[in-house]
Image (cartoon, rainbow, N blue to C red; front, side, top):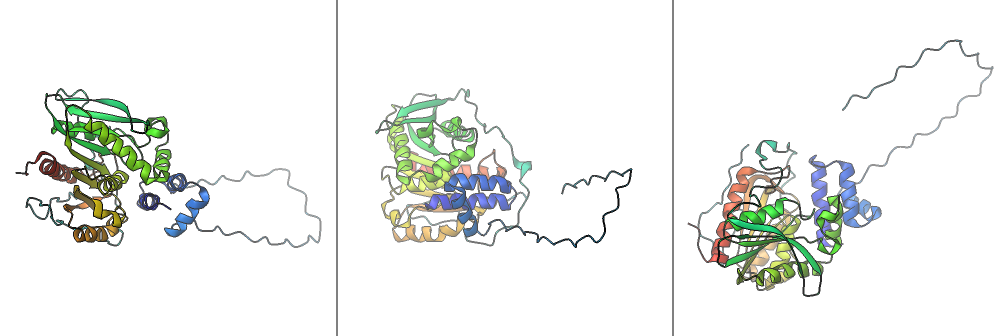
Length: 374
């Protein structure tokens, strides 16, 4: 079993426990991720959420009739039909305002905690359910779908945004969540373009025809979970190659940002591509620890306080980063849950997003533009 399959299984289980998806949907998604119902059942047992066996009633023999039953009455009364009765604004910010250095340490380390009590989805803070905060028609940018070929001839699909003003800009690759290229991620590229970056969101389901081909996003989750890590890294590198080849992109200033599954993929990219300069993975599963030695990018790891299936892996990751003297910083946002950055999701936290976005821009400004935060 691939560690990404395990990560997604734990994410879906958490969503089910906290009421964000139904148990039926959890089983549906898990079956697609694991590849079969049998494998899904084994994983459910591993996670401690297997279905309980139903009790089988024992038949009791009726006593023999001693006399013939009396004749039925001429009139009957209809039986009544039974009817079933249907059943704080967080304060966010880094612990320190010091400018991160190549050997920066984390500001607030995520720690493994007991699962938080389920809370109602923070609908009061949800502010852009369409996933659009920057219009594709914004006069300051140029944005739209693109397609290109990888070095091996694979047709890749994506969405590219850039500042409209003439000039050259750092390039940023955007990696989506496990459900694929949904509207939120092109919007992230437009946000970056407004800040002076050429940004490409790549569809990692391109080999199957792209996310839009699937009516059920859980099918995309299954595809991505079962895809080899080598394939995904190859496709992400194809996106970086495409950015590098654009006349308005600074070839030696490439970064990446990703969310959930995409955060894990950004970690994989960071430990496999020495030309990546900066990375910002949001609440993604850690990469294989033995690969941390190869990392050259400066990485800002972003975490949610109440994320009980990602945070337990963070201390070992930090130990590996320290041991190999890598440039990194970790930030944890109080009162947040996994997926808090996505403004189309139930865990969206507007206040935390404002702080996290500023931290992201400060990191890219320092390591891609060479300008320290003020």
